[in-house]
Image (tube, rainbow, N blue to C red; front, side, top):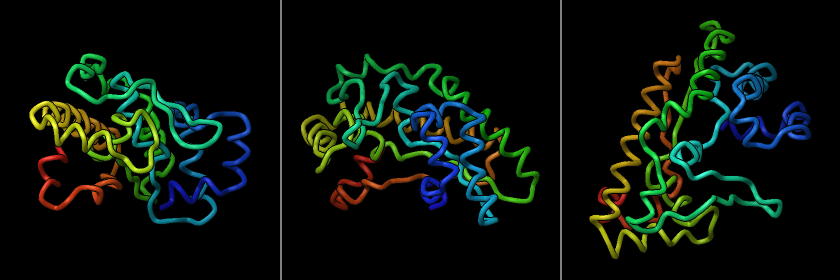
Length: 199
């Protein structure tokens, strides 16, 4: 995918000497620049916004960072209904205004010559990182919550689904021609649980 491929470019690596990944994501000018780098080199027919699936978690109040040793570390885990009080759904999409700004800048710079794609992680996939409090192998905490308290888990996934839907609508309104939903951890669920656990 272009968003990942762009990270191998020397011009991206130069920026990474000055800024963290999260800083690149949260600065509209820098996110625009990184998005355009592979387009300039390879003239792809679509540009994928440089961002991350965990921006939704951060907008809800669960900040994240990349560990020096690799992987993601989040401020706290979300593993039970009581933890939902730490999340702030109201205003979450507004706190992602830097994504809106980047998309608007990109739409102008692409000038109708290249399609612009946005994206979000599925509630289940983002939720796995939130439940573990970062990267994990294997991801177990979200499924454990689902199995022991389906009603509470559904409350969380409903919140995640609503915020994710609003976030994708915002991307369309800011200029995205299409959006993608990444459900990279969907395969960790048995088929009979997929719809109930996915929000």
